[in-house]
Length: 266
Ligand SMILES: NC(=O)c1ccc[n+]([C@@H]2O[C@H](COP(=O)([O-])OP(=O)(O)OC[C@H]3O[C@@H](n4cnc5c(N)ncnc54)[C@H](O)[C@@H]3O)[C@@H](O)[C@H]2O)c1
Image (cartoon, rainbow, N blue to C red; front, side, top):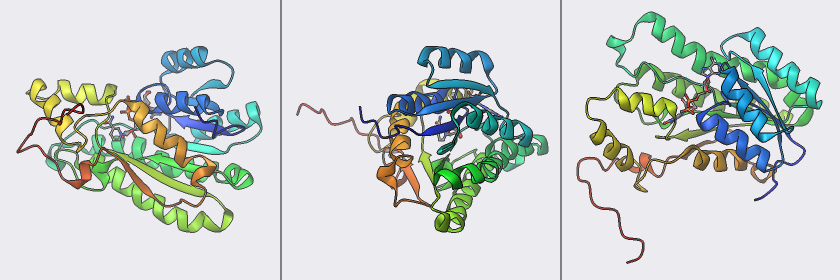
């Protein structure tokens, strides 16, 4: 394992589960100290107990400015600096069309997915300016290509992508980088909940594999590998980039004419 994040301090929002937890594990394995910020205290604390003193848990609601500021203060109090902010926390439900989404549901998706990224960038800026650090936003291909019944979710991710690019221009002269990762599907709790809500569970499994050109829906650790790269000094000249970590899903979905995967032995 590379130790590309040695001496770096990170805050990972939504770090208790799914993609966030995989990023926490990968960052620690690569030498970072990580504050896990999440509203799920039992799960976040259990992860930090497992990973040891390079981690700490902080109750965090990313939609609330005071809560976000307290998490950043905690990272500084613990380790004296902040090098990396991963804006990962997000919600995908309800997965629905515009006409099916209530105004309260719209507000909730925007608050957790988009307001949070704005707050994180704004509040972390002074700390990241000192360390010449970086932000990584966990976005989605739904904000690039669009996705059926994901209108507001996709809108929040599209806005994150625009915020990433505009902020890269604003921050470049300060030596700060900001990028976004765009997965398609990833096998997490959120995805499982969405799958269970679909009328044809078996068909959805096939669909999820087929939307990725590489033929399978990945586990969160495959996203974490790319996250570690973008937050490391190896990516020091990469900013404002939206990186698909999507098995080629954006190249075209293969859902209407499925073909068996090639046998790697043949
Ligand atoms: N799973 C996918 O298929 C997929 C695809 C593309 C993008 N993404 C994005 O990846 C990110 C993580 O998704 P996931 O699938 O790992 O989700 P998940 O539901 O498995 O985990 C999300 C974590 O965020 C936390 N969280 C939710 N709201 C919060 C809040 N207000 N404040 C603090 N913590 C909060 C949850 O407690 C949980 O620990 C999201 O931004 C999501 O949009 C996921």
